[in-house]
Length: 307
Image (cartoon, rainbow, N blue to C red; front, top):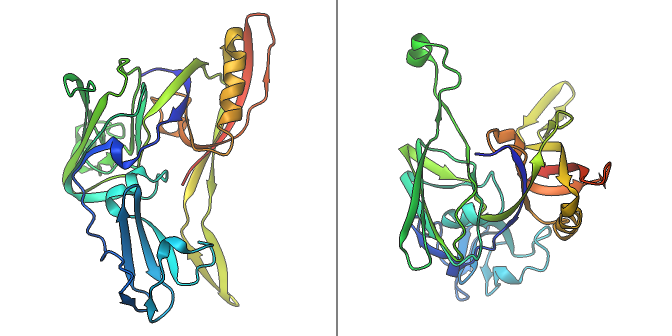
């Protein structure tokens, strides 16, 4: 763990990088061009680097390729639902989980240089993180307890207070091994899940200051069904952060280039990996920088997490 602010560039995860995945693709029948699908019927397309689920929005849906829908917001034949279960943890969204009974394990490799490996949206009891070199030779292993004991004030609390789970884990300062392999295993009683896997190359700056702040934006909806009768629809909550930190004058160009190149792209930002709410996988909204002295600069980074 470290308290240094990190801005990470996520690695691209393609099928060739997924060396093993215990969760198979059995969500729905594979779409075929000769099939005739009814209104509301689900299909999936599982091809190289394509793992998607669609729902038919018309009856007698025959010969219409879901991948050829021109506008996913206004579907003509097929509505895009999301990634297949086995690939939801690789789809850039934290709240879409890959789930399985008792255990999920996968191995990634061939991603170049990775020095930071966060996982979000975790459900389970234990997480095991193993690292191997490109040839598969074992390097290191670490186990994280996903059950939080921070709410327990004593033996009575331990007996009668519900257990809380930790929904994220961050592995930093990974030894430099190009194209290393990483094996992750999450286990637990009942259903376990992984929301987002974000192996990255992180650039470290100084620690955040006391001027930093974190807020939440709630996308839940409240509407009036009829006069005096209200309906509530639970929506996702995202974290919005303003992280102020100092940086060495020599990193001024690096910081500005990072922010410019990551504009509009999912980016990893770790204000302090000891705190879940200071670890973001989201979109940078702005970052005014200045050089108050000849040796250090000041940045106030704004970022909003992804759903």
